[in-house]
Amino acid sequence: MTDSTRRKFVTYLGAGAVAVPVSALIGTLPSHAAELVDPASDQAVALQYTAETEMEGKNCSTCTLYQGGEASGMCPLFAGKEVAANAWCSAYTPKA
Ligand code: SF4
Image (cartoon, rainbow, N blue to C red):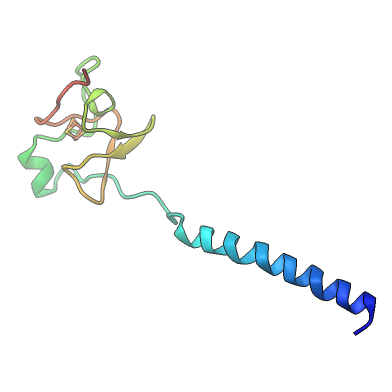
């Protein structure tokens, strides 16, 4: 093996060592956000969920159960779905 060939081989090894962890990380990222809660679903109806409330300051984004961002987020009462930040349900509990 010449020095040039050895250098190329070592370079490829280094690139492979970086590529594998990056590809492993990408595989763990969510491919898309969860669907929003369907207000007509049984659980939503039971909790009187409304996708957009008119109550000033009383919505999911100010609820202690809300785990999300500006537009939508997760709520443990609706596993696997997202609630709208401006939604509301009867289990609303204001953040302290
Ligand atoms: S409990 Fe109700 S108001 Fe609170 S985040 Fe969940 S859906 Fe929104």
